[in-house]
Length: 311
Image (cartoon, rainbow, N blue to C red; front, side):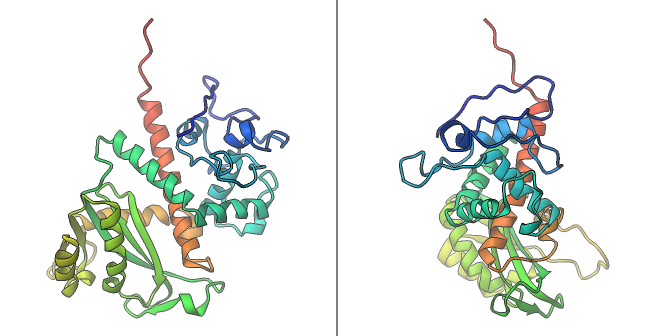
């Protein structure tokens, strides 16, 4: 992995204009004006120091062809984070960011090439390492959430969830025991949890070979449990709600993924589904989780600074 060195001013929460990203060092962004971070969604210096070394190497720098980037990587990531956090339209991008067509092109390129998923997985590995956990998950929690769809969502990619009485889409999440995202799949709200699990679980098992146990709610019970055990070697443990309890009840293991849904709803772009394509919705969810993980890592790094070197 290509790494760059950076000097961060002591006692400063934000960087001064000028950047050490790959686009400024090796690309065509050197003649672009600098930008001082000003929004809550912008990365602090501590976040950027951690995220910078985890960024995927651009194809043009790795010798795969393509044009060098003409805009600062940090500004581009901050712009996408601003959109996800505040739920704005693409055309409403603030003027201090690069032009919105360029930001959208960056977002689409990272979505289609799987770069946002690569950055997300690297950040998740860093969080697991900081929490003294194995990067390779052996247990997970699965659940779904139905959300209303905006008028921009086509009829073909939306449906009606009769149980929740919601016309829109359904987000199927697979998280580890920390609540960190392992995989996500967005479908029409009419798709059942069991049908989606037949797509989600094999992909997760292929990526996480140590995965052996998954906790789920009653929507996944039945023949899916036998199918998962026979074909995937997974124990699908259904955590049922007690019939004697009325009102809210914290259920073992299931609360982990419910908390993850609550984390996502802090991002206004995810309060409902505005995206025309489901892969865009999945990318927005990953961007939301990368923001959460980078902030968690930066806060932990500031609380536990690295020990000073001795001569």
